Every structure is written in structure tokens, then in C-alpha cells.
Image (cartoon, rainbow, N blue to C red):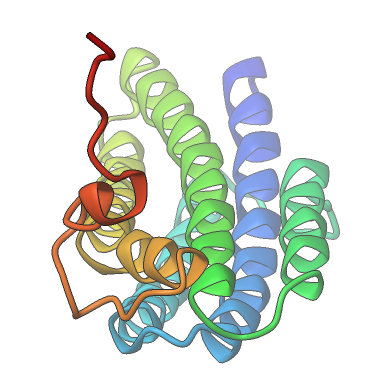
Length: 188
């Protein structure tokens, strides 16, 4: 086995472990989410991730490797951090913000891993492997973008309204500025 294939197998094993850990983490996040759209997003990405695990097994098979018992320590840390943060909050808007933040950290790690592997595979002339990894990279990027959209359109506003003691649907953001601060006039 050449050095390129050996390194690629190591990276694929790490990604396989990361995805399996992410699956368990996403299931916990989904159970703790209160936003219906957030739960639906996790359900969709869990199904997608199951396909990504199969793709990784296919990629390993192409190179003559198997998943093995490698543990992705980075993902372990991200999942442990997410669990710790979730344990500090009750279900509700604050929990949803914590979940989105944790999920995006996970997605960013995965984007980095798949981007690196896809580029290496393509550079080494492993076009089919590069394409396979590129599919997963695109899915991870879409999930990250969806989490950002959801945070901007719903999750953050619900948290801010709760933190300010407002009903999220009462008034648009910024509408209460004058009520709280009163009007300030320069002394003349």
C-alpha cells in the first residue's frame, strides 16, 4: 500500500468515527430542540449522515481499508462540549441557540475534514474518491448554511425575546428600543 492510500485510509477512518459520533450527538440535540424547524433539520441531516457513513465505508473499500476502531478525538471533544452546554440549560429558546452553536461547530469540523480529503484525493488522481468525498462536503456545507438561516430567521429571535421578557411574535426586533430607553434629549 502506498503512502497516499495509507494516509487517506487513516483520514477516512477518522471521518467514519466522527460521523458515527455525530449521529449520536445529533439525536440528542434533536430530542432537546424546541424549534420544530430545528428538529426537522436534524432529522433530515441524521438520514443524510447515515448515507455519509455508507459513502465512507465505500471509500475505504475502494482503498482496501476498513473502518476499524479509530476514535475521532476532535469529534469526541465537540460532542462532550455540546452535552455539557446543553446540560446547563432547560429546553426552550436558550437551549435551541446552544444546540445551533454546537451543531455548527460540528459542521465546521466536518467541512474542514472533507475539504482536505476531497482535495487530496483529486490531487492524487483519485477522481472517483474525490467526487465521493465532495458529495459529503457539499451536504455538510448545506447543513451549516441551513443552521445559519434558521438561527437568523427564528432561533436567535426567540432567544432574544425570551431574554428580554417579550413575546417573540409581538413586535419586530428593535421595536422596543424607545420604550425602554425613553427619549434622550440634550440638556440645553
